[in-house]
Length: 143
View 1 (spheres, rainbow, N blue to C red):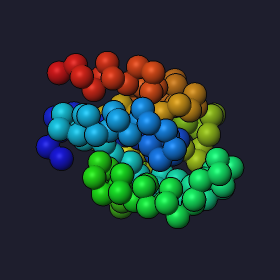
View 2 (view 1 turned 90 degrees about the vertical axis):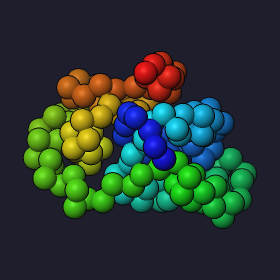
View 3 (view 1 turned 180 degrees about the vertical axis):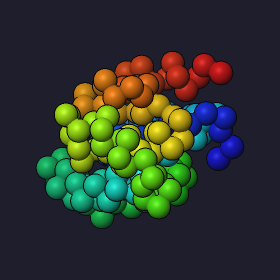
């Protein structure tokens, strides 16, 4: 993973990487030009939601989890809380009026000075560049 730009992925993007095609394709296409980060809490959230989503979609939860773990190994840099916790207060201040539980994503973005890739509207207005899946390729392909 020798990318030149970073981006922080929210848990909803991780789940789309498991259950969709576009996110997985974007991750594998741009692995050489971007570094994909996510705080470990997003990994925990994804692992919690994979089984019920898989069941709802009539997919094997074990296969879905295995696909996620493969995606993690091949494409993701998981950021431990010890690295971003110094930004907790600033992150909470930026997202408090929306969803305070999302502070680790904001803190990771502050730590790395990187934008956020999400479908969650709560990140808009935090002062951090935010990309949705519909537009992320503009960021990823532009040098």
